[in-house]
Image (cartoon, rainbow, N blue to C red; front, top):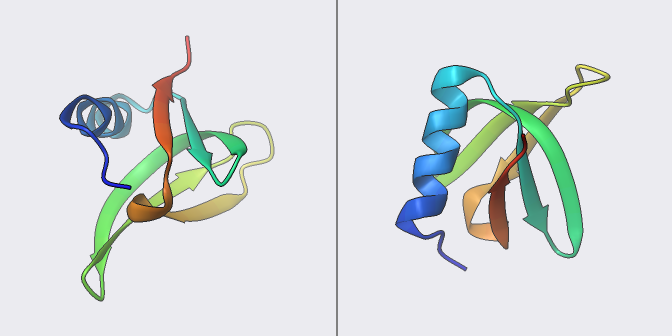
Length: 71
């Protein structure tokens, strides 16, 4: 499912500011700090960190069901 322009704005803003986002994929919500958006083999990938553990997560943008700001 393609992301809306508003969702891309949230994602890009969170990358620039280092703020948290809630990314939904297949019924699971991931609260992460996105660090980079990159293109891999024609697909966009979000590189993010878990805010508590610091573990790295790689999520494909076309797999995301939604993006929400975390305050």
